[in-house]
View 1 (tube, one colour):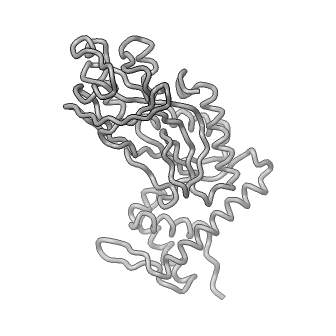
View 2: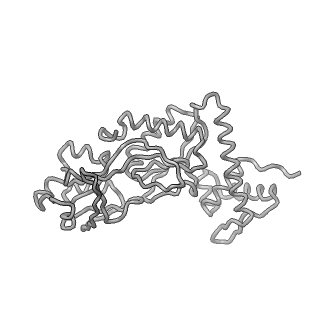
View 3: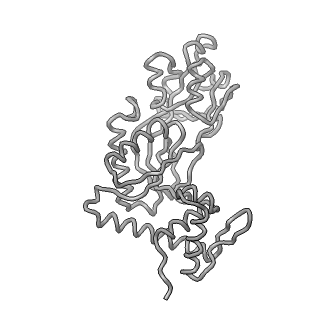
Length: 306
């Protein structure tokens, strides 16, 4: 009788499938490509099947490997749930978690939150990554995506962590030079600092007024970036109007470095924990999400995020 595959080898296999590369899987797992190759070879011998087609340039999963991949995910999820259920208390999460977020919010808010999370739950290990694109948490192997914005795919589960909104603002120097816009349509004649960040539409701003009416304006300007912090700095330097989350620019509004523009308009952009449906019953995910809700409720994401 063949030896049964180990959970560790199944995790190695899943990582290689996601990365389509032995070396990339080795980087993520903190091991060598030779070790990854050895574990895959052992797994293929135990299952008596070929899992990958290897060439000099790529690693492609076979049809049998696809079936093994789906079973491996289910098996590892079941093991994770088992460990959570039989732990001393479901309030003590343990094991590995992969968490992601966007550049600015990840660095300034989520990173410190994770530091506090690990201090409270030392049996957890966390790999945290930031991206300038929308992450498919299910296919890319993440447990949690901490994101700003309310557009969430229906196949994902989500819990709101905090309320947040985006506002229009510019520096006093810019407004003195170019004047205040009096209607949303006036922004088309202003220098607007356009951000291509994750799932934000590039150069299209949708906002609601105090009456709940949504309006859309196409904006342009000489400067654009994929990093929100850069755009905020440009706005402070007087380069144009920016649409940015209140958690990010609240301190500059208080100091007077930035001034609200068209203050009757704002864009809802709440803070969410997003996770794959297969993890909807995970005690580990649940405890971490509840911790993050508490973290944001205590005002750690900024005075204006409630």
